[in-house]
Image (spheres, rainbow, N blue to C red):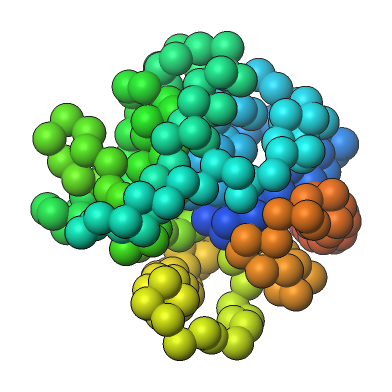
Length: 261
């Protein structure tokens, strides 16, 4: 006998920097076809969108908060032994715009995925301060300082699982994955920051292969490959591409046509 899973539909949102605006478009497409996840998991940029969505905000409401913000203004230089930048301003921004403080207070069960860099294992947060855990999930190693939570030094969840379907598969009958971190890599600059980021990207491209295989329905948003991870001026274009690519997949999916919503 097949054991019934705890949740029907789980939604996994990948990391991808500013390409994460495509998640907002994807959410709007899901709204338009009437798909409402029972649980959501996010990594890095996906954790930001997941937190706002789980708080009860629509795709349009999330874009109204995030779409006109110059993300570069949140990057504070903080040269230290553990990173070049810190995200304290972004943490305050997230906390200010969320209606609740802790993950367990969100309307939708939520997993914010980070990585314990010291103990070398996954850190799927399901409780505790949202903003702090989202920042941990976004902290690319060497680029951003690790975030210390409950005695653990946490970095970007994409180090081990850039598409958090890994956390949803044991819990859900159906897992929908939205991947906004396409495989094409642009030219590299020969400096420490660029090399560190390229190394991180190679890790995520490798681990996402297994994560994709865990999805019942995968939306791989490839049209955003031309946008760099830090292309802060292209939010609207990226969100539109996320919407149209997701809608195309949903309309042609036999899984969605037969799904009990």
